Amino acid sequence: MTAVRNTRRRLTGVVTSDKMAKTITVRVERRFKHAKYGKYVRTHKNYHAHDEKGEARVGDKVDIVSTRPLSKLKRWRLERVAERPALTEDVDLGAPAEATGAEQE
Image (tube, rainbow, N blue to C red):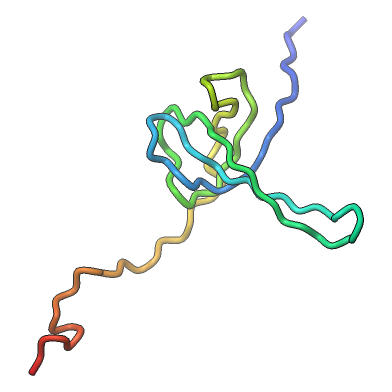
């Protein structure tokens, strides 16, 4: 008989930080209907997830899955990077002054 693993809780969110070693912070939003007023409410929660290979970047949409406690805050691990944001045109913030016309007299 083969061993069957328990079904694990899965969440989808956006990476808000990847500054820690092998750890990402994921913001997960959820919508629900208010019990009394019936209005739809949006709320969010941040989760720390284990990213062994360091493949997730800020802005990526990722799937995380529950796991055993890995540290004080980490109870989730990165399952996959679902979607990367589209590359935008690079903007040079250190543009020379003649491009802005500030030093021309």
